[in-house]
Length: 246
Image 1 (cartoon, rainbow, N blue to C red):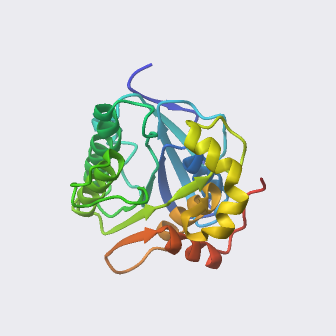
Image 2: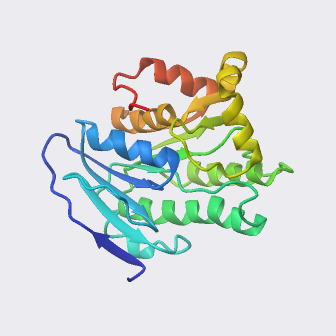
């Protein structure tokens, strides 16, 4: 396959008008974002971009396979005319080298944003960052430093609306193979942890709902908002579309 290759076709059922692109729909949060976007009546089309083909088909959905996010030039055409993007591409600390962590977290985000803004300058951008992200870029923790650098780049990229989400522990909801011991431990103690420290946890499906809601609702004003975990939890309480069954 070429670096960019379309899979399937998109037939807009005319139930909505917004055009949305999701990066990282094969991941945990991106997968829920895709599910809710396809069901949302305000969204007319969803374009999923990633390295792997989804096991999902839907009249609204177009899949675009792209192998190298260090160069997103080939995405200019499918990114044209989009109203919003939800960017969930990322990796876990410790699963890759620090150099690769920076490439995925910072470089891929900046490159995608560059092409999206050139193709759809009016698009809103919803970005999955993380708790403790340091916009100064001086943190000794690589994850915090690189997420902060990515945030700063997005806020200066020229998008009319940028929404930064900084979740703490993201509860997977559905069983999965945890990436490391810390995540296995947190999943095991989650029932107690969410009671004792409610502002340090968020369900993956709730996070996805919030990331989708801000770009669907829109605003006539320019916005650059950062949502910490407690803000995300408060947002979810006011949302009108339900949890996905788990």
